[in-house]
Length: 299
Image 1 (cartoon, one colour):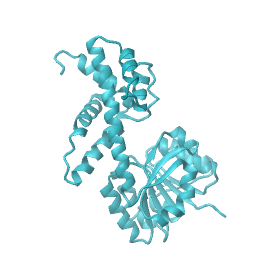
Image 2 (cartoon, one colour):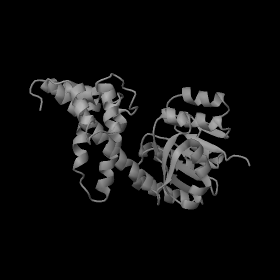
Image 3 (spheres, rainbow, N blue to C red):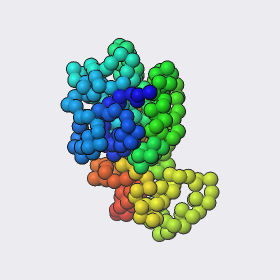
Image 4 (cartoon, rainbow, N blue to C red):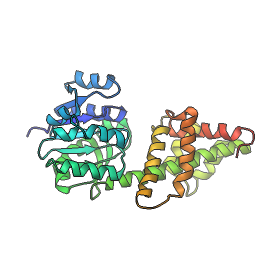
């Protein structure tokens, strides 16, 4: 049986790795350039077809995949005369692999349904290295029949593939997950920064904390940089963490909840971005906080 044709928008680190995986498995692939040519050229060199507009991507595809940075980016590619929706074929499935606002996702879903097509949200866990091996965690939600049709493709991309219910559920759960993860990471970064301020060794703080119920993978990721100098154990940029925690707060606000816990994390991340740390990894928040708390009169 022939494989479905796939269109892909958003060839950043993760998207490019996913495209390479799809090409490894001989999926027909159509791509479009966004901010950088390098990853598009790499895909084209291996057989992908490049087109000029998102509409053309959709016109050539059974499945359209997006791996974009923000809801605004997704919306800019979906709507308009040259957008994905304008070019969708009947029964096509569009999948948003990014981390987007659930309300935006549901609104796009309605517009896609009007074209007799289906929209799924499927945010990702793990790293581009996992994507190359088809070992992502994929948190998909939306119409079950459409999910069942694309599940074999998702399983070629992911080791753990979940169907989580109605459209928007995947993005909701991903934002809750990332809020919790970034709260833990920033708390651990502050623990190390305060250890510096108090004159105790980071290694001793980690040894004690990791021996008890506080121990977690996120603690280990931050420790990998704070103690061992490895910033790549947690390959997630501060600017992206700031966006996701902000989306979490917006999601809560949309249901009339003023999130208490996310405010301090967002303050720390936003301050780090403003100080020029946006492109650094989340584990490097320990440097930002250590520098901040070392300042005279810091509190």
